[in-house]
Length: 305
Image 1 (tube, rainbow, N blue to C red):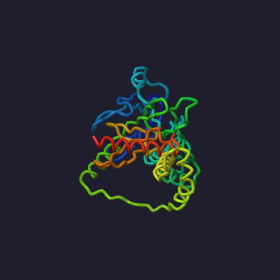
Image 2 (image 1 turned 90 degrees about the vertical axis):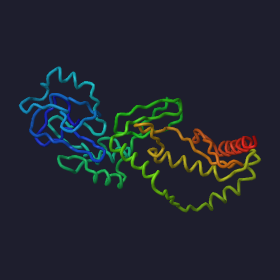
Image 3 (image 1 turned 120 degrees about the horizontal axis):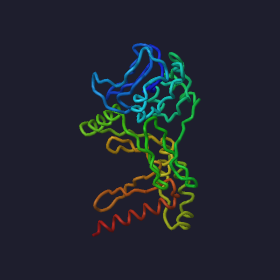
Image 4 (image 1 turned 90 degrees about the horizontal axis):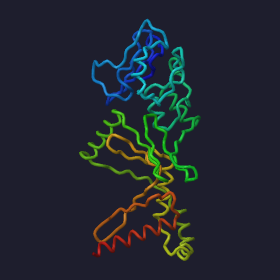
C-alpha cells in the first residue's frame, strides 16, 4: 500500500500497486479523501473485483475508526519506497519500474532524486544515476561482530535474514511476476537448446606468475600451483562484486547467500564429479590446491572400489 489507514490523499494520487504475473498496476484514488480500512494486507493475494480497501471521501486524516486501524496493524509496510509526506507529497517515491530496478541494483530508498510528476523517481532517473555513479548500494550484513565481513544484497521486500555463524542467508519471497519469469525460464531450459557463450581472457600474466613461483610454491606447501586456484579466486571476486548472482531458489523464495561455495569438476575413471569448496573466500591459494588434490585422490580411490 502507498497509503496507511488514517492518511489523506488527493484525487488521482496512487493508493496501491497491484502486481500480477505479467505487470505492475498503479491504482489511483477516484476522489480525495482518507483511507479508512485495509481489507487485504500488503502481500496478500486477491481476485478480480475483490474489495481490498475502503476510503472516506468526506473524512479527515487521523480520524480512522479504531477497529479499522486495529485490523490494519498486521499489514507490513512496503520497503521499496519511503512513505509520502503528510499532505500527499510524492517527492522521492519511485514508480513501480524504478522501485524494481532500485531493488535489483541494491540501491537504498531515497538515494535517487526524482524528476517525474510530483517529484517521483522514474526508471530513467535510476538508470541515469547508476550510469553516473552518483549513488552507492547499501549492503546488509547478518554476520556477528568480529566475524569476517560478508555482505548480503539489500532487497526491497519482506525478507528474513538467517545468521548461520559465518554463513548468513537472506530469504526473500518471490513476487508473482518474478515467480512466473522463473517458471518460464525453467520451462525454456527444459524444452530448448542451451547455448554457451565464451569470453576470451589474456592469461599470459597468470601463466608467467605461475611459472615463476611454481617451484617455490610446491616446496613450501607440498602441492603444485595450478590454474584452478586462480579461477576460484576470480569467481569469488565476481560474486562479491555482484552478490545478486550468489543466490538460489527454494520453493517460492529467493535465498541470497552471504558465503561463497565453488564447485570444482574432478576427473575420475567413472567420469566427472563436482565436489564443493566451502567458504572459498576464506581459503588461500595453497588451501584451494590442497583441497582439489585431496578431492581428486578421493574420487580415484572410490572409483577403484
